[in-house]
Image 1 (tube, helix red, strand yellow):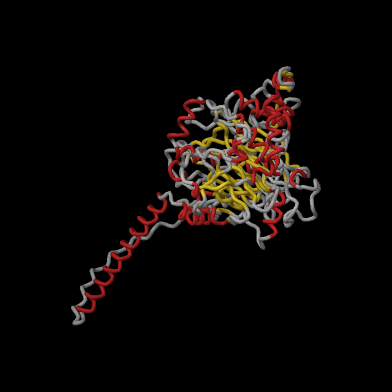
Image 2 (spheres, rainbow, N blue to C red; image 1 turned 90 degrees about the vertical axis):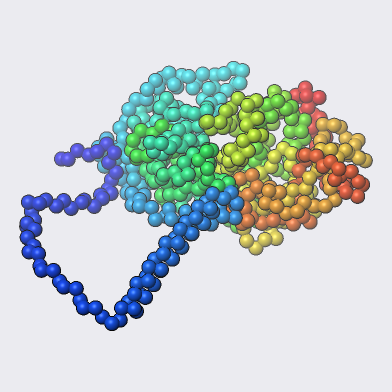
Length: 610
């Protein structure tokens, strides 16, 4: 019996090439040269023939010139940073990728290769699997005892603490693998190529690297499910890698090939910076189990240098509904939704932002937001106290984050980097903006991206769930996002009237004056509430990717200023706001004045920040 390769994939058999041997073919006959053919006699219609030849030469030159012009125009479009061209370019690139020669992508084989035997495993979805052997994990007993160690000062085990601070490690999978044998293809925690604490590296080719941060299960309502993997690379055209999808530590991984790669940036590609990408690993339609981990690698059924926890669920949590109960058809229901907020990666290392952070969170709570999701790099000790308080209370979730190499993560230098390396910083923002939405899309359907100096101002409603019900009911179609326009409440506009009587720790409630004129509409002057049934990749002000592929920020709906807008409490106005007629009082946030002022004071006193 012919031995099988350790990387055998069953039952795909590529066509065998036909081998030709000289010994099996007759010799080539010797050709006798024929006498030269005399030139034909000259004809009298030489002029028309000469004209035809000149026309052919002219046509060839014209075609070559046209090709050169089109090439230069294409290069110009590819190098531009104008978002007008990014959507069409990504659309065409995505369409061309669908013709990629990858017949092995098919997911159609119901057998699993185990220890050289072909068996049927009904607990796994039908698909292509690697052959693997059961082995003992290196240092398994040490690993288990270490993970079980209790940290008294945190009242957590190391396993739980690791899950909190390393949110993308499949800690539970490793813990179970330590208790008995596991598939030899499962990467050990020691074989992962760690970079800058949270990032895992894999090779695209001999010259290019890919750094991976997180992975998510996408149920993809109305389509086939998938695992989305978020990473960065300096490669302008990353190759399509293979995916090892893990359902447990015993069985071999399901093998699929990446079906789609989307560049998550409104800026054009530039190999001088780490560019964010979202990779899609397709799953079989009969995928009943939830994947627990995924690896990306250049060659299937070999050892991987990365293993990411797959985050998500097949059904949305009940936290998404005001009633606490899921409706019969949650994807067409337009009322009864609880909104959530995704904030930025906090880098207030040298700035005590604690007062303003507490007020911001309490205003969001008063407006009816269910939860706030934040990212922590390095913050002031007082800000850390605030984050710990609200995390223990359950109103916020905090994900630890570090920027990928070669970017520095020393907090003082990183703050300087965010101010001076703006294009690199904007590209990296898209990583944690998108990560936040995908990480929590199974908890909430509608998620608003807001910074701590921004607050929705509702004209006709007292709570955001009521405003959301009204907004969704007013549209006949669904949009990937709903944009609220900025209006500025400048720092140098001193409080007047009843606002001036409020305590100084209530910054937004005190700064109730804004310019009389509304801001002119501009792509950078909006923030969006995203529908996570559709949105998949975003930048600071809009969508970049939807479940249907590339979708620009122009695909979102714009909320009229007569219904709501976004207060931006930042910057200075200067001479433009000196006259009485240039500003006006807006007291919309004062409807929450009593509730918020009492809550803020209570928290600040408890944390000894007042």
